[in-house]
Every structure is written in structure tokens, then in C-alpha cells.
Amino acid sequence: LYPPVELENLLPFDIRYRVHDKASGTSSTEFLRQGGIFPIHTVTLDHLVLLNIAIQDSGWFISDPGQHLILLLGVWKPSNFMIINTNTSEFTRDKRLILPDVNGRQLELGLNYIPHGPGDSFKVQIFSPYIIINKTGLPFEIRSVAKMSMNAREVAGETRKDELAKTTPFMLSNTSGHEFVLKIGNSEWSETLDVEAPTAETDLVLPARNLEGHLGVSWTPGSGKYACSKVITLAPRFIVKNSTSAILRYREYGGAEQIDLQPGSTSPILWTRREPDKLLLIAYPGLNAIWSEPINMENIGSVHLRLQPNDQRTAPQLIKADIEVAGATLFVTLQRETKWPFRIENLSDHHFTMVQSNEAGVAKEKAPKYELVPRSAIDYAWDFPASPDKFLRLTINGFSRTVQITEIGSLLPFKFLLPERSSRTVALDIRADGSTQILSITNYNEERSVYKRARAPTGRQETLMSQEAFEAVQEDNTPSLTLFLILEGFGLSLINRSLVEVVHFSAKAFKLEYTMSDTSQSINLSIGDIQLDNQLPEATFQVVLQPSPLPSRRSAPPLPAVQTSIVLLNDKSHGVMFVKYASILLQSLTIMLDEDFLMEILDMTKIKGAWQGLDE
Image (cartoon, rainbow, N blue to C red):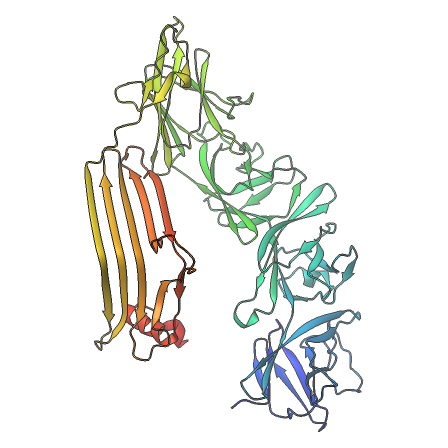
């Protein structure tokens, strides 16, 4: 049994409502908390029923129609009376509830009607089309923009700056579209923000004199019963977190403002210079602070930088900056690191000079150079971590080779001339050791290398140098072991504790092939047809899973329902697994489930905590 009307408050505030039966003249007033539901028994569904509300703590008392309002203090006035039930075609249910503020501006709340069943009783939900959560700590202003219009209109609601700087939900509507402009602090108005997409995250740039504000804006429908409202979150675009045990000082590259960050604390960056790259500098506090090279706060991932203590007699310390995305915010987490990202091992007989460069081998004038003497090794992190393309340039006797150290595997050998004009060659190999990538420089041995010397054409003297003087030789990939498993079909049944068959799985045309050679392993799996049956006595859907039927006009033989292949290389010397090829082909499948079947499967799996959420 249901009451004639149920009222559900999906607003982020408590309300006091009044329901008025126009025909009988009866009214009822009650308090309703946010998220609460209240049954209304004082109305008859064949009468005209009106509703109005007042936001609690707004300073207004709700009243009967025609009576005077008593103003105290606050933001919102009581709403107009809206029709939520009608007994004639002359009137229709209202889908919007007009809530005016103290300045006469109107907020249009939504009314969503949900019938209780075959009868006439229903539930009416009161919701705000948009709800803004401000996490910036600065006051914001927002205006609505009509579709295909450049004019922005003020919206109803709070106007006190100290309140707008809080995380108190801000209700918003725009019946003429879904576009807004906004500002925070002393910024200028932003470009038009379109929130039509169901969910999105974006960086909204706000002009502000010589600076620009970066606002992380995200929006998504509310969860569960709050799905009618779209929640818009305003947050700083950049947040720096100090996960070290020491105080760190940071500033923007080219900026003057310096901020000290205590261990374990965070600090937002809302204003930046008008530069395409958002660069951050780190230092230890002090009068003679030594700033690190900049890092780019917009480059997602991990990057290492050297941080020199103020006592220059102390060796530089390694800091790892993890840049991660959470919502529309980029978190820059700084922490001490003891394991260097790169290691250069010169195991050859030659002396090289190393420097960071771009792909063309061009290095910056102030780039430090490292001497790689024979039989030596150095730990390394990028000297310029903010550079868009980072390479290492090896130089010997005027000959150079650019290396991308993040590419794991055997590289083309490096051929060069010594001062006496004799030719020498070294092999370059990059392998992984945990989180460290190691570049090894060794004397070239043609017998063990996958790269062989290129043979010059007859009558032509070899003048090729470096990469052009070598070619990769394909190794023999003749299989040394091949296994086949071919089944016309098989079936598998599962029974519960009562020895009742619950599910039956069947497969046809099953083929499994495994091939191994000296260089690789391959696995190929093909299943022509699969089917999963619900064997419960009163099953609503007897076939749970099966391939979707194909058009009857198709003349080609049917494709396998499942087909997968993977090829793995046997090379384990580089610290990673090489997947040469992988593919999964899955035909269209039809899945139909009923609740009893799902409950029975949950009971059979005995997953710890599987019933906890259902009991709650």
C-alpha cells in the first residue's frame, strides 16, 4: 500500500514544504531533510494539489497562499505554488518549481514524477538541475548563457563572497541551455563552458591581468537517486604535495612568489604565468636556495630531478615527481628516491662523452657533460626533465650517436674512427633492472650480436659509418616443439550444495596450438561455438550466453566465437617480457540473466563479503 503522494527531497538542503488541496482547502506543512522521503495522506488524487517549499536557514517563513511573507535574513524566498496533481485537462502537472532569491532572481528546480504502480499514487522528487561544489578556497561567480547567445545572465543564489568561497553546495539552473561563464577571485570571466556532455573533465583558463587562472572543472551525474542532478566540481588544476621528510620550497619558472611546503602537506597552484608550459622549480629553503631544473606539471607520469642542498659540499639528492590525474586536478607528488632512473655502463675500451640532447643531437649550451671512461658506470637522471624530447648523445673523436634510453633492447652498433683513422665499433644495449634502465656500451662482437656488418657491393670500397654499416639478421625460427589439442566439443556442469545442477557450459570445435622455437613461443586458441545454460528448474532465461545469430544471407563459413593468439620472445636478458604479437577476436554474444540465477552463482562462489552490501 502506498500513500496518495510521496515527496522526496533531493536538494542539498533541508526544506519545509506545504501541500495544499485546492478543492478541500486542507494544507499540511512538514520539515523534510535532504535525501528524505515523506508520505502525504492529507490530499485526494482527484483534486487539484499544489506544492511550495522554503529552504531551511534561509530566513523565510512559509505561508498560506495570499498571506504576507515575514522576512528575516537569508538567500531564498519561499517558492511559488506549483501544480503536482490535477483533476482536469485544463491544468497540467508542473515539471519546474520556481524558487526566487532575495534579489528577485529565479532558480528553476526540477520536479520528477515516479508512479508507484498501476494505481494513481506517485512520488514527486524535488531536485536541482546543477549543483556546484567549490573546492578552490576562493569565491566564485557564475552566469548562465542562452544557447546561440553571447549575453550572460546572473543566476539566483548566494552573493556573499565569504560564503561562495566555502564548499557549500550551490544550486544552479539554466532552462535556455547548458552553457555558463564563471570567474574565481579577481579573475576575468572565462570562455563559455558547455556542460551538455554526461560527464567530462577540463582545464578552464581564466584571464587575470598578467596571470591566468587554471581551474579544474569536472561534472558528472549524481549517484543513485541523485542522478537527476549534474554535480559540477571546481578545483585547483594543480596541487603540489610534499611527501619528503624535509621542508621544500617551490615557485613557478619565471615567477617571484615562493611557497614553503611542510612535510606531508599540499598546496594548490591557481595562478600561473601566461606561458604554454607550466614549469615548476624546487629548492630547499634558505637565503642561498639552489633551485632545481624545472619540471613540466602537465606531463603525466614520473620524472626525476636533482636537488642540491644549500651546503654545496653535500652531494645532490634525487627527488621523484609523480604527476597523476585525479578528476580534473593534476597532483604533483614530490618524494625522496634512492634508486636512479638510468645507469650508464661503459664496458668497452673507449672513452666517450655523454650529454643530454634532442633527437637531432643538439644539446643546450649549459648542458653538463659526463666523461665515460673505459670500465666505468654512472647513475643518471635527466639534466633537463622538462624538455619535450629527451635523448642522450654519445661522442668520441668527433663522431656522435643519439640514443633513446627509454627504448629497451639491442640497438644498432655505433661505428667510429679513432685518431689514427682506424675503425672501431661498440655495441649498445638497453635493459631494465626494476625501475632502472641500463645502457650498456660494450666492444662489438659480430658472432654474438643480432646486427651483422653490411657487405659492400663488389668493386665498391666500404665507406659506410655508424648505423648504415650494419643490418639485422633474422634468426632461424624453426619450431622445436609443437603441441595440438583438438576437441570436437566438451561440456562442464556446476552443481550446488543441494546437488542441483545450476549452470552448464559447452564448447564446440575447440583447437589449442602451442609452438616453441629457439627465439619465441606462440599460443593459438580457437573455439567455434560456446553456450552457457541456466539449469535451474524455474529459469526465466534458459540460455545465458550464446553467439548472436548472423544474417541468413551470409554465405561464408561461420567464424569462431573466440579466437586468440599471442607470440612471446624468449629473450630474458633485458629484464622485460617481449610480446611480439597479441590478438583477441570475439564475435557478438547475446547475454540474458535473471535475478535467481545471479543469486545462486553468488552463493556458489562464497566470495567473502558478497552478501554484505545486499544485507545493508
